[in-house]
View 1 (cartoon, rainbow, N blue to C red):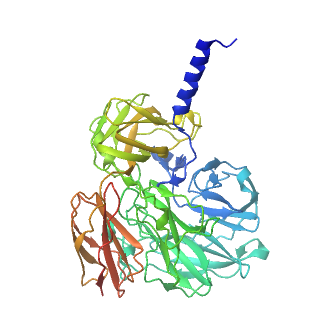
View 2 (tube, one colour):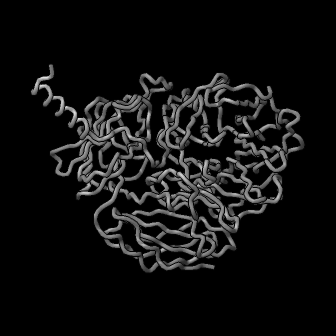
View 3 (cartoon, helix red, strand yellow):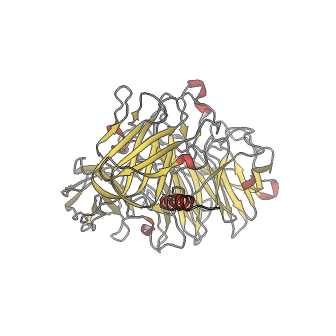
Length: 588
């Protein structure tokens, strides 16, 4: 018999459960770098360098589902919504693990081919979601020494049923192309030929080094072909994966093998400023609503110069056929598309601003000089480390005033890691996030111990509902690395103040070397940062370079093309939102 006391107890428990936030709700947003379980890369085993990395991404829309292939990952990822990615190991993988693979979806079949300087087979699958692959052929003809095909890309022209391959990864050789013979299991049909070379003397963004400052001869790689309204856009990455200016460009032709013409608006995808810098060596694909996306590689470069993560940006072609990728606020939260978007995809930006930049942090412990202040500097190559990797270590960010918190991103660092496998029983990420308005009473915002175990080096958490808070606390539970190290604890949301003012006195003076322009502007009181917006016409300001307010308000931009006029504007942002853009200035 149910007593009155027992009934009251059950009702109390019920209402307490109802008041607990839904900590594992379905997310509707994403934030670069992509939140996937990047795999420890055994490539550097002999050098005893252990790190999780992702590079050279290819996302394929195959039968309305998505497949992500990444260099040396022992498998690949599958998603139905581009938000939740499941790692898959395959029956024939790895017979030899793959670098920068080529992939193509044709009818009901997914084709796959690895980078090689030797002879390697092409694989195919009609059930890639199950990890079932077969040999389409047993070998491809060997090309001359150093030619490849390294960093290959498949292209099937649906209008002509012709097949092509493009490739190249070198600072000596060009991007190559060749037609394939489908009747002969995709063997080379004719002699391969050069498509184009880099020209750093006329294309400023193709220059090597940080902010294109190194005279070393640049690298081209990462070929990809997209056909749009009868035009062929052959894309490529340059000038080097280990720099903030790694980008994608394109040449355009009326035929898959050219001749190709350099696009004067290059680079297409470019993100040299902010946290997740670099956008080169990826691919372009369409989602289920017909929207284009451009993937790329974001630079970490801490344990090894080539240590990287994966990013994706809205992309497309405007009414004049100009190709673009939208990297404005490219490492802030964005909505995942659920329909065809307008324009260049600005509507996907949530408007959630970075609340944590240079905010004070306290930690439960500190190893050597790796202080907690480094987790809010927006630099993936600086980090905090705890004295011990044990549950209960904490980090607390003081936002310095009450804000509306909407999302969190935790980026881990593999400091002195000793892991060279991906055993899911030990390689997983768990933590809890708490919020508080006064630093005394804490509310649980998310708890990864209640979710299935997986590794999340770039864990992004969209809160079930906005939370008003001043303090954000990270409580550590588990990472596999022997040392707990975090490069960035990023908090997103909105303040309650007015939008920042529009920056004034933007000037742009082109140098004698037309690849360079000197930019200056007047700082805005209270701003967190600025976006320089530029392009080749006033209505095509597709490029973005992000700066912080504590950086100088002058900059030498070295990414221009010789003989091309440019237009510039600037906007300010803070924790409340974004200003209106300034008046546009022009240089010839």
